[in-house]
Length: 103
Picture 1 (cartoon, rainbow, N blue to C red):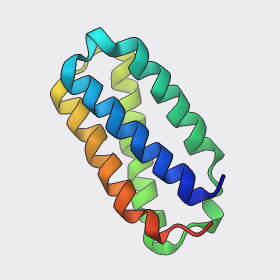
Picture 2: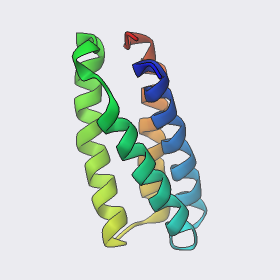
Picture 3: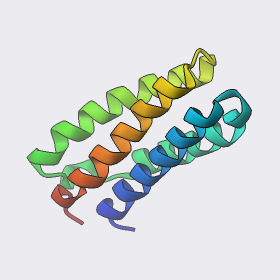
């Protein structure tokens, strides 16, 4: 799987997670945690040495924000709508910036 495909899968996962969270984080927490785990595996499998400079800065900012989202989900100290919107925002950003990822 190419880096671009992985980035797009991460973005799709973030949008799914965000929607579930906005619909009720506590009721969907098990599913959200499963997708957070899968997303982390994808992030760790990326070959970041092939990222363009245009995408590297975005990715570094994303990873910082993602780690915070992940930490908040584990602590269960989550405002479903706000947390979900932040996840979906990153999903949208990554979708649009994926064009700068080389395979």
